[in-house]
Length: 293
Image 1 (cartoon, rainbow, N blue to C red):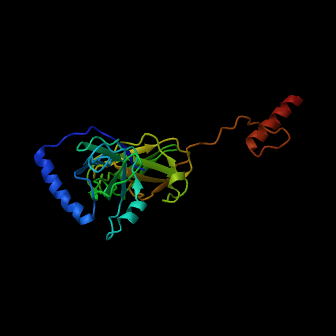
Image 2: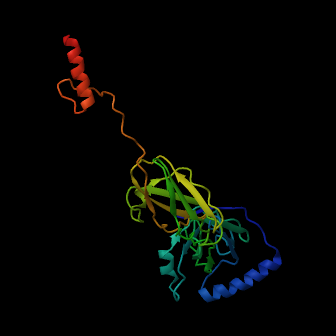
Image 3: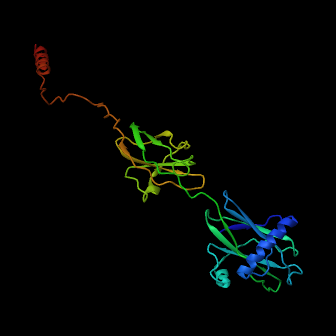
């Protein structure tokens, strides 16, 4: 849900006001709107904020000070002349400013919109009863933003293993597809093949490197593995707008068995068994004959 915050009103120069009023008279005539005589908006890519401003009307027509505003928006325009149906289905903006004296500039910032989306706004003014004004002109704005995810890594390779580590290498993707620089990596491994469906259950590596510029070869070493196990590895990249790449290719390798058998510590001869070694047997008979003398 977008959030709002009022910000300081300001007065525009007379030339701009005359031009704006001229433009909005046409909008008012086209949409059947009744009262708003000034509107403007702006949006920033960083937080998808739309700023709206308008000239305050009055409590009774254009005299006195109104009591409240009702601002609503949708992502579709008005079809035909059925403004009421559009209004009833629209999202209500909260945190609106208290109306100022007629002729003053009132304004609000609405945050949290999706990027690359067109939003349509209507405003109404209410007095203390409340009696509500007609609908304002329809203000529209398309947000900017980044919807392009980094390209998926396609050449991830396991280049070497020890009993507890695996070295991997890949070519860095970009921020937007294969251009620019991504913001972060998520490298994961598992003892079973990694897919999009089981990605969340794979073990995430610690200390992944910062992405380099697209096309750069990068390497990383997975630590804390167990010997004689097969490991599958995958990687995904994220850009600074939170767009996540597709799953990379998923190579696998088996860590070598580096643990030798424990040494025997209780080796001894069995006195009740005859040795198969003729030298040992002969030595034993000689010792018995010597003792008999």
